[in-house]
Length: 525
Image: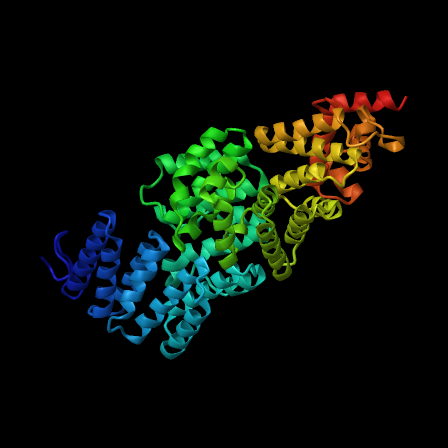
């Protein structure tokens, strides 16, 4: 062999030991983890890190592999493995990084000692100045903000991190995922959709499956239900075997949510029932989104005491409420139905706390909705509907409309309008099960009014059944305006016009613009 070349089975002398050692350690750790011994796998990695035998490049790769291995484990395993590692004789930089990792895991599940852990990690980082600990300390602080519902605070911390920089590639999945969670919580669904598409530097099955799960949550939030279920089922059935518990739990929640909304209750129960055994905190925190789906089904929730468990976990961290807007109101609805006043009060307070820390239209509307459900306050429910109309959260809007239709303090005519619009919106997002519920409420209101109607409360049909806002939309569209033109002229969003048009079609029993023109012209002659 010449001095400038070597065969495939030979390494340069200065590279040989470190590369062979790295491959051996990684292979051993992966075999242990796949063999059901995750604690031993983490121990192998941290023991090698403590040895500090092969320089900075070897240490960097070890930290990257350790971070990925932790992401594939339950919080209890990750915390136990990291704490055991901290008992080893580590150099200052490695210790500061592991302390930051511990704090990040703790913050994500709402550990009561998170603040103390972050302080310890901050002190260690100040002494070491390690760039790895700097990123993980920032991720820990962002996670703490998310656990308290402080989305602007988390956004500010994460904005300072650059996942595309060469030194941060190992942490790019975590940085990108946390940013997407913030965007979902703020109601910036288009930004979240863009962010779920990885750059060429971001690859790997773990990373791509995490982005897919977040995109499924986005679809559930905006009402792309068939697409969400199809993608979640496909990924679970044919995706990578090495899904993290958190990603798997999110897919289960998405599938269960869509099946309930479609009226496929038995299929939803079959998906959700196995996860109900995940009862011990902090591991149960990963399954809180699935529990938020299951609480709508008394056949599951009562037997498993789900409401109490979910409220307890959310009191530690509201993280699970952030990406899917309608989860908070659903929990209050379930608590009111169960006569659990403390639970309804606690969830309402949590949602209001998020709205205080994150004063955007979405959370203000959700705070109104939860308060309206708790107090049977129709004015709060009306405010929620108005606020949700300005967002892309269609399922939350449809639910709020049905809540308004079910509120005992609402006049029959307004309740019918709300129920009709809810039914139309459920049809629009592909939720026939919920649509049937709204249609049933429409039928109840049409045949058994709460009191004898008189004056302007008389039952209206045809064009007369439209609300004033719907009449304005119908008149403009029947006159030839596009939906965009109508939205601009009426100073409302395109989404509002589209939703009102669906309600108009539903009330008039028509299906297209030509039929609307004819119906409008016939009443104006």
